[in-house]
Length: 529
View 1 (cartoon, rainbow, N blue to C red):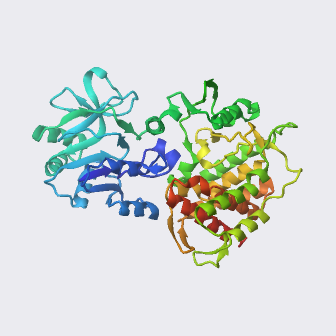
View 2: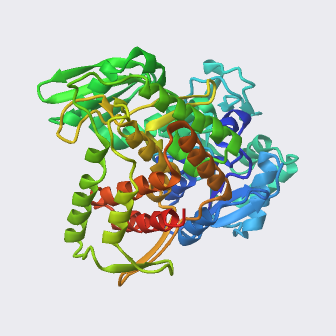
View 3: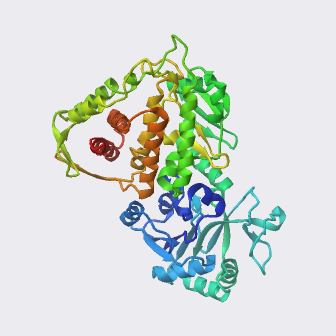
């Protein structure tokens, strides 16, 4: 059996940023941590995930676990580590005469150490209360009590174990008064354990190590286009105007708005490769918080106030005459029509055909397109052209819980004609923000939906939690009060965005179907307003 031990909640420092969740439910790479951890299990080995008995797993997470054959073990709250392990083994009905793999819930490896009866050990630079392997035969494993002396140990215990005799492990921990390390020392005396060094360890158990491990994980998967160190993030591209536009936006952003971005560390151009650097911030994107955290609604109210404050600050910085700008009718309307027609042509869809959505009255794409265009905000000269981020969605917004401020990254910086600019109609940024909150875009990207589409009949479901409905309601209220937009216009812009993005998601057929269906979902909300 491969047991992922996640039967306690994260500590206070992480809980303040993600809510009260077990460590395996932390976000990593737009997925839950457990979705990465289960991939470490050897082929053919049963996987179990322990969680606190009091933790309510969401329907969508439970569905994922069921679909992947993961057994959930609910251990009583408040147990010590050793008692929790014994309880999980007893509750799992795991045969006690077959090998047992144990992985701590806050731990991930790029590759597991190999061997039987082993403990993984690694090097660390942080001063936490690590368990260490010592040179003392009487007390081979012990806590370092926050005093890590490099000469007195051969590595810290890094969260992966393999035992040949689970029966002896249970006996050893029980006879050690449920103390985990003392139980392992007894097992070591009776059966024998070997420490195996690993430099593939990613630790998510503390705030500092969480963000460091997250950066390391990201860097391993994006290769040459993104480099992350403890101090900076570098984005680069070859013959790509997009990166040059982003660098230009950061370079020319007015001083009054620079508190909303990481420190810009300059850009370079070597031959045809353009790159720029930003300060690396130990902060989480709002997209991960919206999908994976369990923060109270009051925290989300503060976050939304922060996003609106940025948008209002942008409105104070007007464009000069003759500046290239992004106008709303360039970004929505005709652009949406062109992209939708392109999508329909690729999928052999007649735009006038009617579709059935979740037992609602049938409606055609043409009707949805025309009615959403009808309710778009009025284009006139009274609305100011100001600084525009251009892609102000949750995945491009970080939140600092210590200062209650947002930081934004990955601006657009280009007009539809390919000109460099930092200016445009801020209502487009409001729409992009709305497509994360109201459109549930990040939930779709994370795969948190059910879709069945055949013969122009759509069955589509996103289980929007009740708390998220409160967040959505508060967002609409803020937009109406602060910017004078109507809720109908806000929804109309969402429809336009989701129809417009369809050709951009051809790499994932199921996700593309969900985005398509989501336009129908939002349309049915709009028509009731």
